Image (cartoon, rainbow, N blue to C red; front, side, top):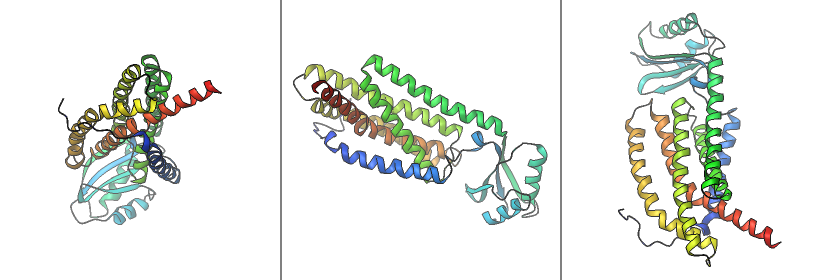
Length: 300
């Protein structure tokens, strides 16, 4: 393998407290944002409602669109710029779905410039279906994480499974928090990105754990902390090259993929960066802390 990083001896675990404070601050900020928003900002896929992407032929403001929707009782609709200057994505939450409601919304939009607009996308999802999808999303993530704990417990030891689980939880919380802080919606494509984050972060963590296990057998007289540090340094070149290669593709999607794919690409970008970080500064310190705690119990 091409060696971008050679002969390094970085004391990663010596910086675990600083890393913990940084992670804690980001997670806390995200959780506060989620609470203030009344939960994650779900897209129409999970909330239900009507979503319309429209492009007006004349100059139009968000205030004009909101005013037209307020007149028909949808003043709480979510409206944001999308792509072009006069293009908007409108998300209207309704208790039921019907063609009459959609026509009412379209007529209201037509009143702004006498019908001079183009509907580029129109989606409707019933609230019951949205609720079911939201439950399925949470179940999918939890089942994936439970399977990971079982797999790592069998392949390695339970303490490694705990380290991986904490790292995965860390990655998901940070990504969710950033979505809330940036007022971005959680959609089905973002869910797919979350599952990718789980898999990618796990893969990186397992590579490190595998090297830790090998070095622990060869260097039995060294402290477990030095063994983990050695393993992190030995796998650093592989971690950086793999992450940079994948990140390059994801960044191209983020900046040139268009507005529709942007949330998905953003989630992947955050997941790649945070997943790489957590395999070094979260999973490994948790394993070290677990090992030290078990030794204290034996010596007590």
